[in-house]
Image (spheres, rainbow over the protein chains, first blue to last red):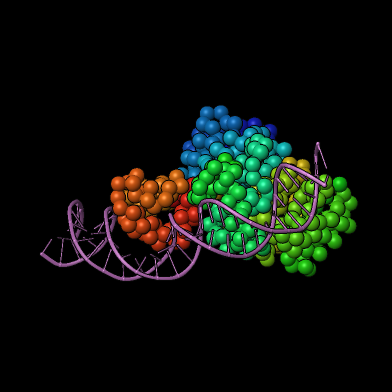
Length: 209
Length: 209
DNA sequence: CTGATACCCCCATGTTTATGGGATTGAGTG
DNA sequence: CACTCAATCCCATAAACATGGGGGTATCAG
């Protein structure tokens, strides 16, 4: 039995999700509030929900701040954001505040249900667009067309250097002779105006290549 | 029509995914390789897949390194990891290398298919366990204040290394003997479990120190 | 064809690093 | 006080690196 709660200021949405969950086998949704404040007031230490569905745009305390508070006091509660916002900042803030899932309000009821199941089983429900934004956080997309002066092979060599490999190991990885590696590295040094692999690694990791 | 490719060294798995996709309406899987190297060799600039399904544990160049290379040369290709590994490091490395999705090898074929559809529509397919790990990256649950194991002096030395200085120049900058620099660097290597200044520089610039 | 590029390989020489062993000093702690 | 620890220096050896040459091949634009 999954015990859920919902904090959402739109009565219609809140009611509809609550009703839906309550008529699903294995679900119970006994917590239903329209603000963080009222949730915190009515909370009983000995009777907590496993999962909380959270709106972000709430009257009074914001959903983000609310999540921080709730997580601080009850880390065992899993929080799922349920919001119309899909901008990276809101997503990022939510995850940092302790959300373990982020669903857009366009998510159909049955997916919300399976999302909650996912959550208690150690997964993380996320709308696909959200997942994409989260992932883009790692791999900065905003890379402009930086015309690297290096050739494709030379860039492969740089990757090897950054990984801390010796010339020999780079040669093995790229299946070329160590002499060829040397040759390319000489070219790289000339093109980048550097005089050692240390500088190449630094430049590379700073995105200057 | 979604044009996909797969790089996977297990013939059975590769073949089965390729065959499955090829008999799905709206899919074509014409690229099928068992290593990064053979993929790169056979690649035609004027005929690229939209999506690549990538194994991580490949013979020769690793999937992670391969993704870095492929993304560097063809940023428009979407990469989905397809791996047995679900440890945070592999996931994190993959995303940083440019993966836009991460599916475990337990994923059924039809979910792989819908994952690819998700991808070209701007989403990001992720197995639920993976999503959870990604999210935990943001919400530092058990994140300790990792106290740098290095002493103040050692950190100064690291700065010198990152700046691309030789031992001699570091010694001059810090007004100590080159022998002392050597000594400290030995300590640094021991403490960080690395075997060369390249790795120290990389770690440092990645904020791991 | 010619020149420009990228790629591949080999050699020789000197410098820098990596790694092991030492030794001494001063500050801080029990 | 003895003891630890960071910091300072010295020596020796092997490996890795930087830099200068020298060859080739293939492709592509003019």
